[in-house]
View 1 (tube, rainbow over the protein chains, first blue to last red):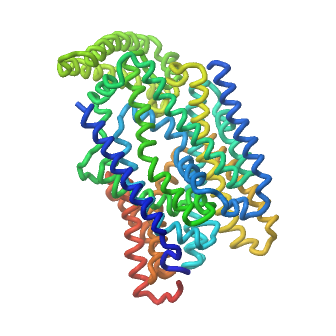
View 2: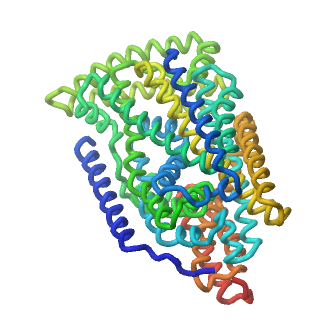
Length: 40
Length: 553
């Protein structure tokens, strides 16, 4: 059996991963803004 | 409910059933039935993954939680994107490339048959029971709200799902999940739109009221092992929970095993990575807005209509008096809320509003105590907030859409559970131990009947959920012992030096340590258990692999 991934992520997938992390950062910023703006 | 709403609900059930049965034509082999011949596009698998995780409990319970507790539950999902990325580069290529039907089948190829059988048995035990619990949760609410016997509610949810899952296999499950996910998101967006439209204050003022009651308090950065909803629990504990669930639970693994390539399988998980946190925030926001809406429109004192009727019958006079007090206090709170929303000096008005809100909560607490005394059961009133709102406040058509969406959420989770339970039963047990050399047609027939069996079993558990309550709880608790430990076995499988004896005894050690933590320090949040289990298996498993005599693997 293989012990390492036999199909390494292609470069496009790495770009997708960067996009995922960027979207998460934006999501967290929006949630943070919601809390800071309205939480009394 | 208006007949148009019923037409929408019945139309939805018929459509899902007919579409599912139509797909049975494409299912003429075991690989087609369980893996769709590895032909499904990543986006469809991705929506199926999301629909499987989003159950009726999310639509009823989590929205209710948003109304009572606000948005902080969203922290629970902060580890999910990280987990999806890790799985995309580790377990997904391993499992998809191994051409297996189940995640546990891979463990035999990598380690030995006993590790495969133990992990698949643990899966059957926990998921068999949880399939029943997934039907029971909405069925109990439907029965209380519509006044049906519980068996009817169980049948309305269970029978169509069993039919399309049994006949159409993973094709029917996945494509039904896609439509169900669309319906769910549409209904959530629609309900937010209706709430904002009907609210007597502006969205900005509504959010200020929600914020004043702490319902927009999202982030908690305290490092507290006993608290489930903190930033760190979500990011660290949540990552391990999501790794365990999406990486080793067959009900999820089977979704992406059916993808047409490794890349499509990876992409399918990234759809959750992108959308899960915003979706969960939307679900909770529905609850928060319903809470604000009920500042201006009097909600019932008890949301559970069955409990309300029981209290009225048993303690009518006391309850009527409490209701009178409640109405008077509500009027005061409504005036305070309007003033707080529009006042120039917001702090004084807001303090007055919060004082009135505390009085309302006090009265509600008294009503809940009465309900618990009269019925002898926990009130779980939070699960009835949204159903009562949907049925009494939404315009014609919208109520039907939302009830159909609750059904969709329940069906999409149950169908994946049944499909995976059948796969594990047939592939990991029947074909592995009892009848290894039968024809494909034989396995296909057995698979369909096994799906029907698990469906009937789930309906049975759901019907007797009240009686079996403690048993379900025990199994769920037992399930938490091995979730992280199974993840540890898969992580060990990726380590070149991991060996069979290390995996098997590491798994047992991991479960033992989690059990010890659960009983020895019960106040520690369950989210940490997965991390403890996975790390124990890795440490014990690797030690046994390096220093033991086992040459296998």
